Length: 201
Image (cartoon, rainbow, N blue to C red; front, top):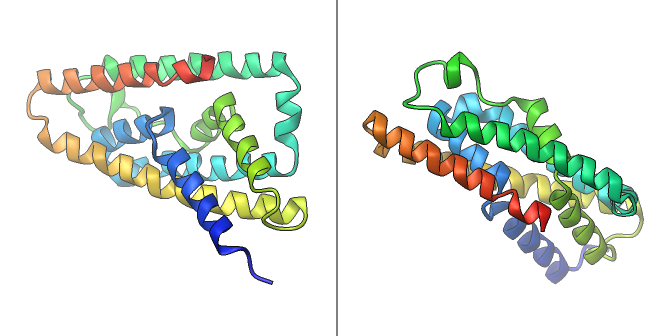
């Protein structure tokens, strides 16, 4: 028996909206695209995509419920994630025109940094738990559900992150002067800080 098509389309739409809207991961993808281009940003994009797939899959088999029941763990994760995002925002906002190889001679955040940052975001867990609860009836069994959710969210995240990275690359083409780069970096850094607000609301 195949999956109910309307329910699958609803899941795809849910994942698409959840992953394409502005947030920390997407803003970092845009900033990395602007400063480093697509190829050097791929580890970051892959880390966010696979990290989200694994996170949603974990929520699908019940780990999200454990997190929801442990407020102190949520606070620790939220605090650690926020501190890292603030550090990244400062690095972005204080940068000028990019000179190879990038921020102060460093590369963009890598694969593991992206995975850790995503898993430290309680809002990502909340989205994952909501998805696993809403679409629990799509397939019988926790493992098949986790696999389906991981696949859909992983693909949606990959597409969305590449779009945001491409936006950053297009933005870079319009920036000609040091002052323009500094203004754009301050804007991206400020937006990244603003993305923390939903995490604490």
